[in-house]
Each structure stands twice: as C-alpha cells, then as structure tokens.
Length: 228
Image 1 (spheres, rainbow, N blue to C red):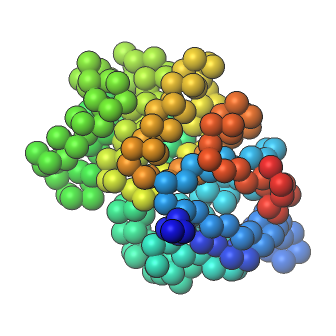
Image 2 (cartoon, rainbow, N blue to C red):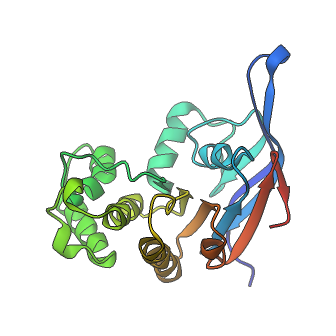
C-alpha cells in the first residue's frame, strides 16, 4: 500500500521585487508530503526554507507553479478559502514560541480553536487539556509564559499547533532558541505525536542531530532542491 499523499507542489517559484530588481527565491520546487511523514528541511540561511514553509502554510502565495493539499488547489483558492483551509488543516511552530504573555498555557493552546469557533467551548477546553497532558505540562496549565522555561514554552507552542488536529504541522527552526536537552525533548515530543497520530511535520533546521530523527530529508540551496 502506498502512503497517502497530503500535499504536493510542482514547479513552485517565488520572486520578490519589480522586474529591474527582481529576486528569485524559489526556482522551481517539486515536493510531495505523505501522511505521517516527518521531513527535515535542510539548507543554509537564505536558501529559501522559510519562504517555502510560508507558502506551504498558505501565508504567502507562490509566483508560479502548483500547490495542492488534501485535494484542494491552494494556488488558485481565494484568500478566504485559504484562511479557512489553514485554520482547519495546518499547524505552525516557530523558532520563538509566540505565546501571548497575558494568557495561561491552557488559554494559549485553546486560542486557535476558540478563534475558529468564535468562542471557547467545553470540547475545546478538554482538547487543550489533553494536549497539555500529552506534552507533559498538565501541572503548568495555569502558568503564564513568564513562569515557564524556554523548553516548556516551546512544548506549549507544539500543543497549540495541534489543537485543531491539523494534517500537517510546519515547524521553522523550532529548537533554534533551546539548549540541547530542551531541543531533544521538543523533537522527541514531535516524533511521538507523529507516530501516534499520523500528523505530518516539515521541520526546517540547521541541526543534523535533529534531522537524523526525521523519516526523510530535503535539501534546499539557492532556491532549488538538492541532495540532503
């Protein structure tokens, strides 16, 4: 049985600026992501990794090529359709946790689901509580970010990314601000979630130690896919 394809891009390009000063960041990317895949995206700074993740996350449109996920043509979808798709099927983890300082860990995890639903519900509360249990922070649910360590804050960010049960989570240098022990805890958590739920992850990283724990590797150099 072949693995289920959840996302495909073909000939994907992205350029910035006007014709005279145009900068070509992505130069024809072909990429397929399967269900339950954990992909390491490797490449030096300026190679286009963050731009590719931003496009895959529907936060930016490509200049050319095709972009499909779960059978939806995201290249030609309206802004409203892309926003709705993003809230239902995509999760994000960034290098900095981006938790809201005035909210507790539980409230931060609930936020994406509550925003999509227009209110907090018992089901959302239970889902967020289960996720904090899963990331080992059940005893920190009422703590604000300032009272947690960097590794704990990033684990809350992972839980938040999962609250809407996304098919794909895009992680841009998720361990870049963490020490080795905390980084290993976060990647170990992502690996367990990947294995237990079938959620796919694309993880942008410079860290070979992190990449070695992924099921596949993609190299990016000067806007092109290269061996990793």
